[in-house]
Image 1 (cartoon, helix red, strand yellow):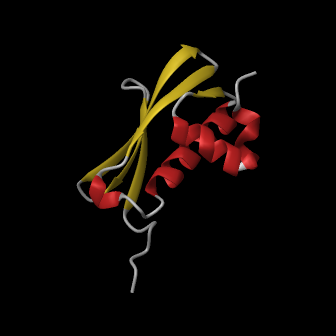
Image 2 (cartoon, helix red, strand yellow):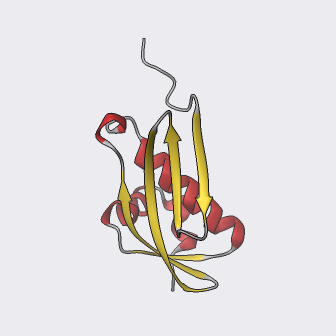
Length: 99
């Protein structure tokens, strides 16, 4: 039986390091960003360790970061190809795009 993809996951936002993380045991997936100003984040890099791949981890991590942006009324510049494609596939996050 497949394991629960949400079991034991821990999301964190490290504003000092400019990254969101999703931890599952010792493995950590990351979404790195740059602050362009206090209201704009450039999401430029995602990484998922090989042991976590193929389980939707990157999508859950990106969705978490975008929900944060929506809640904080922050716009996002998605220069990471994965983040850009995620927003195209999940139009409910289109409101975060920097205009």
